[in-house]
Length: 98
Image 1 (cartoon, helix red, strand yellow):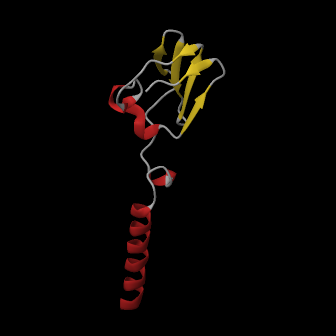
Image 2 (image 1 turned 180 degrees about the vertical axis):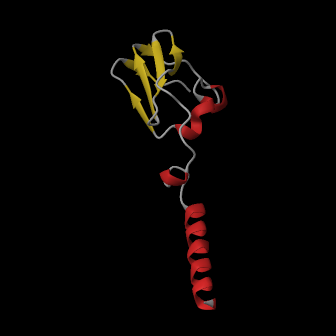
Image 3 (image 1 turned 45 degrees about the vertical axis):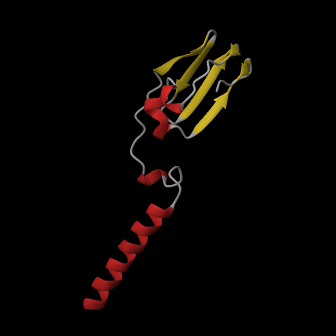
């Protein structure tokens, strides 16, 4: 029984160590649920919009140039940074801002 306890403890310790050593975006099962819904969107340029869907895809669409954001802190999707898994830049976007 003592050996079984040690084995179980070793397995849990190895799993915890492995989960902590992977890059942040890798262990999807260990991440918290995505908080974004299909309604999470806004503008990011005169004729550009951003949308974050429930699967973690941030889409920039429309036409023209994106506004400059001199720090990620000021981006309109900042509160969802941990939820973004993919970024799609649609046809028509002329430039990506700072």
